[in-house]
Length: 103
Image (cartoon, rainbow, N blue to C red; front, side, top):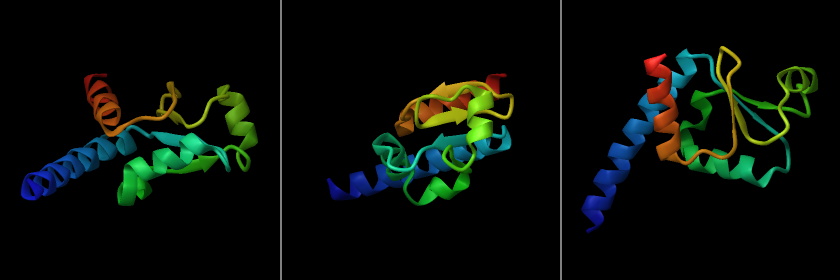
């Protein structure tokens, strides 16, 4: 049972890495706020792969967040400024990357 879990987690991590690579190439950023519980959960969901995407703190980048109309956190923003607000579990991140590939 443990070997199956280890294989699944390795396979899942590989899928997540590929998805994050697609999103990075598409110019995605994740806008967060200090003290936001869902933002911390998002970082935890990405684990050691979190550094593959830029995370921008809306407390520091207030003008950009205001210009984009961001009012929910975390908010994923593509290079084309398409907003996708809310926490994304791994499955949703993979789906987001698949949608990006179809554009």
